[in-house]
Length: 412
Image 1 (cartoon, one colour):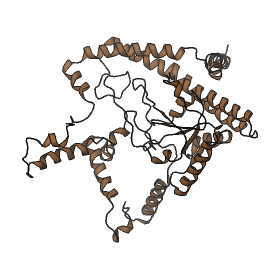
Image 2 (cartoon, rainbow, N blue to C red):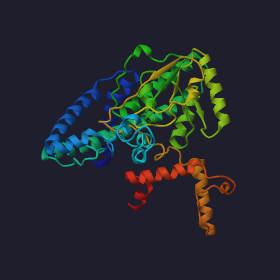
Image 3 (cartoon, rainbow, N blue to C red):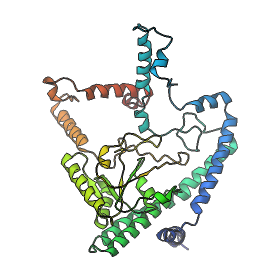
Image 4 (cartoon, helix red, strand yellow):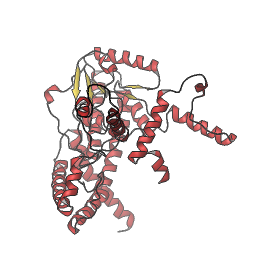
C-alpha cells in the first residue's frame, strides 16, 4: 500500500466517522452524548488539577490571588461613610485626599475598560488566562498538560476544522439554494432546517454543551429576543434551540459572504452602523417584521458590542421602541473551558472601517510628501478642544499604568 492509498483510507475513515457520529445526528437534532462525556472528563481533570495546584503553592499566595482578580483593592463604601471621621460639617482640605484616591482608582482600574479584556480565572485551566504561573507544579500535572496538548491539537483541532468547514459551506450553499425558491411555507420550512442543521454542526465544532433553562419562555414568532452579547457565536448558541431573524452590522470577507447567503433564505436585517438614515430604515423594517406574527422572532443584542461575559452594560433604547413582545435571554459561558469573548476593537471581522481607511490614506500622504502626521482636527483653530480628545489621553495613560497600553506594546 503506497502513501496515497493510505491517505485515502484515512480520509475515508475520518469522513465516515464525522458523517455517522456528528453530521447525521445534527441534522435530526439528536445528540449521542459524546460532548457531554468529554465535558465531564474535562471537569474532573480540572478539579484534580486545581487541587494539585493549591497543594503546590503556598496557602498565602492562593488566598491573596483568590481574594480579588483586580489590580487594586477597592473600598466600595459610599462617599458619606468614606469621609466620616476625616472632616467636620464644613469643607476641609483633607477632603482632597478622598477624592484623589477615588480618582486614581477610576484611572487605574475603571469599571468599563476592564469589561473589554479576557476574563481571568482564579485557577489555571491547563491553558492560560491567570495571573499566576502554574505551568509546572508536579510531574503528574505536567503529564496531564502534555496529554491535553496532544488531544487538543492532534484530535480536536482537525475535527473542529472539518466540522467548521462543513457547517459554513452547507450554510452558504443551502441558504443560497433555498433563496431561489418563491415565498411559501415550504421555503420557510427549508430555511429553518438549513439554519438549524448548520448551526448544530458549527456548535459541534466548538464541542459545545448547552443547557437551556426556563424553556417555557422561549421566544415566539412575531416577538423580539434581546440578549447580552459576548461573541458572534452567541447566534449559534441560540439557534441550536430555534431559528431567529438576526439584526446586525454588514461585514466583509467570509462573514459578508455568509450574511449575503443567509438573507436570501430568511429576512435577516443587516445595516451599516455609520449611516444614520439607514438606522431609521432598519427600525421601519423591524416594525414591519414583528407585525407579521408568522415571521421568526428577531434576535437583537442591545449592548451594541461584545462584553467579556462578566457583566451586562447599558442597553440601547432603540430595541425597545419598536414595539412587540420582548423575550429576554441571558447567555453565560463557563470560562474554564475557553474564552468566548470577541474583542471586536482588536480583532475586527472587516478589514478596516471608514475611520481606519481614512487614517491609512492620511499616513500615505504624509509619508509621500514628507509631512508631519498629526491626529488633531483642523477645526481646532476655531473651536475648543473636544472632551473626547481629553478622554482619549486619559485612557492611554490608564492603559499605560495597567500594563497593556500602546506604550508598553510598542516597547515590547
